[in-house]
Each structure stands twice: as structure tokens, then as C-alpha cells.
Image 1 (cartoon, rainbow, N blue to C red):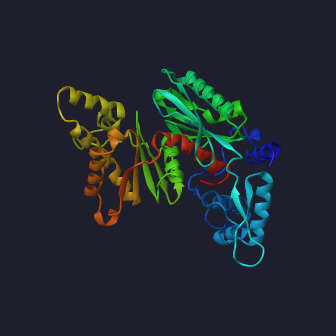
Image 2: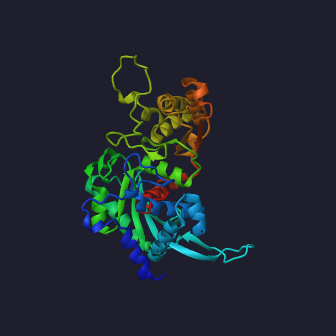
Image 3: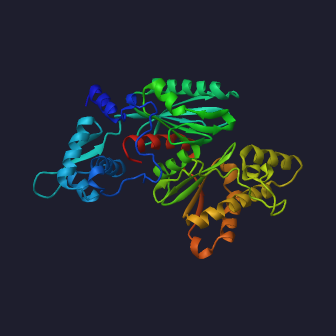
Length: 403
């Protein structure tokens, strides 16, 4: 495969980006399962079956055409036709013949072409800097870059995003499949940041503006949603899960029945502003001093711990109270959705230990044991790169239908 072939493949995957004034990557509609697993109706069959073949190779690797047909339920003729198309686009490669003790011609093994494309991922969730990376399609980070935020808001903040994206595109060593961005705030399906107070953004068309600037497919989503996609795609997630991001603010991403949950106004998971105390009485109206962020945000926790240590007090009760408040916020969600797993993402020194223990203890006390006996709560295994790797999943799912 030569460079022209690779570029041709990129053009075919661009979802006619030049013709769409507001590019939205294929596949990120509410309720769509992230991973195709079965055949569908004829009118949708070819696109779905193409993703099904790619998904099989992406996750399993080194499969013959017959293996793919057997594992997907597609006919051998359909698989052969799709594989021929994917080989021509440079998305799939032949690895050679499988060693076999059986008589007859050995099967030819296939794999998704893991070096043909790279992905630009950008994380805007940190209050001090914007972070970015060039990743391979397996989520491996090939190159990093960051831009100090220096308190920038509004148009100045967008200029820093554009600067970072330009630098990352320049660092790529293969055609770019797309650009994925995890942003704080409420983000709709067109990649418009409806509101992000810390960045001073209201109705900021980040996705459209970056596409117009780069000419590449771009997808922008809420940072907590991006993080839960990373846990689903690259982490240890086993089923339905809720991922809690703890930083300057508190957010959550939800995957239920294999699909990302957005909510009616794209604000699913905005739990940081939920009141979690009745300290002022049951009739108290919304009060910012009674919301989850008041107890759990990293700056707030760090300040209270410093004050405790300065006075010679033990900081453990502060962490336990934060965990209890988190458990209070999560218990109705766990009860309503019967979740099997909750994952925490944030500073391990704060979250892992008394805080996590208090959270799971509160959850178990506030939900029916027989319905939630198997509920687990753990730290993410992906560390600070979780949003960057989730940005890669955004692009992969939108462009190739795999995750």
C-alpha cells in the first residue's frame, strides 16, 4: 500500500466533510450501540456489515475470511466482498497464510491496518492547560503537546485550542483519521459547546470551526462522556457503567446497554451541581453550598485538607464525608439503572482509599442489597490520559464504526 492509497482511504472515510457545513461524525446518535454485534435490515446492511467486519478484526485481529463469517454470522460471499473493498482502501491488510496441519490450501489471515492512520486527541478538561496527543488506532500515544491556558477565556481560549490542534497535525507521521476533542461543559451532537463557564463559552461551535480550519473530520463531546468511552474501549469495563470525573468540577459519563447516554438537553451526567445534603432542611431550595462540587471538587478538597493538616487534624474525615456525599448522589442512579460498575477518574491520592470506601459503603446502605450485591467501584486504569484516549474512540466509532 502506498501513500496515495492511504490518502484515498482517508478521503473515502471523511463522510463528505467538505460538503457538510456542520460536520457530525457518523454514528454518534443517542442510543446507538458502540460496537456492532449482529446483522441488521437490508437497507442498513452494507454500512453496518462493514463496521462489523472491522470491529471483529479490531478486537480479535488475525482472522481469516472464514473466521470472520463464522464469528459475525455473515455469509462468506458478503465477507469476501467487504474484505476486498477494505483491502483496496488500505483499512485491512493480509498477513500471510495460517500454518495448518490440515490438507488443502491454508487460509489467509487478515487484520485491520493498525499503522495506516493516526488520530489527534485533545483534552480541554484541565483548568491550567490544554493537553493533546497524536495516537495510533489502538489508543497508543505517539506524540504529546500542551498549551498553558493562562486564564484565557472566550475567543482567546479557542485560539489556544486551534494552536494545539495545528501543532499536533504537524507532528503526525501518517494520514489523520480525524480529530477528537473532550471539552468541559454541555456539548450537543453537532459539537457545539452550549455552555462551559470556566472557558467563557456559550454556543461555541468548536467542532465546526476546527473542521473549517483543518479540513479534517472533527468530533467534539463532553469530557466525561469522552472519558467513559475510553474506559469502555481501552479500560477494564465489563458492562453498563458510570464513570465519575473529579477535577476542577464533577462530571459523569454513562454507558447503558452498550450506548452512550446524552440526555434530553445533552446534560446527562452533570451531577456536580446536584444538591446532596439536607443540612438546611428538607424544604431548602437549590443552594450552591449544598451541591456535590462543594464537597468533592479537587481544589475544594485540597484546601480543606491543607487547613486540617495546618491545625494538626486528621484529613481522613474530610475524605470520608466527600465519599458519603458522592454515594448520596449516585444511589438513585444506581437504583434506577441497576448499574454493575462505577469507575472513578481523578487524583488517586484523593479518591482511592477513605473516599472510595465511604462511597461504596453509602451506596450499599442506600440501595437494596439483593439488587446491587455485585456493584463494584474502582479507579480507572487509564490515568490522566483517559480523555485523550477517549477522543480516539470518538473518531474510531464515528469514522469506522469500531471501539
